[in-house]
Length: 130
Image 1: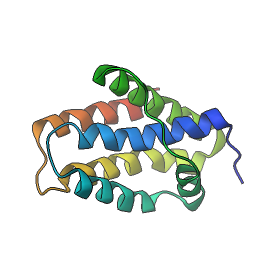
Image 2: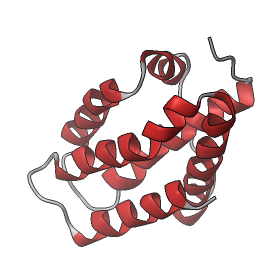
Image 3: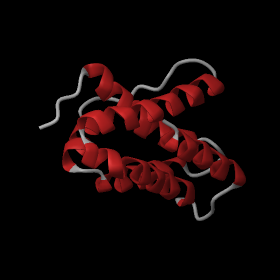
Image 4: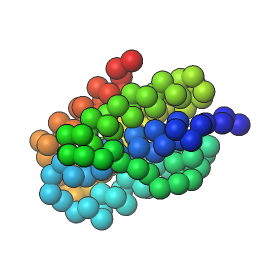
């Protein structure tokens, strides 16, 4: 069983839930539908990672919208490194799973707008930048 520090656990929760929030708030839309779509899509994470993500409330970075975005993107980059060091199997699947979740959130209202595409592109870059 992989053991994560409190800080690592917070970083992972901030990354996953923060990515969903960034996409969901990129354009006006059906926040309830988008939230439910994101939560359902989280089922594709491994059981240990799902337990970690559900173990406590996620925390988003404080500050302006730009501060929140920067903090979430940084948490995504750190999450990839954390998982690479502690759970290589989860690390391999993490980027594609987060992106699939983001796509589910973006398309939950039946369309994906330009702002949502732009946010997903930033998330993709954060997940692949080491």
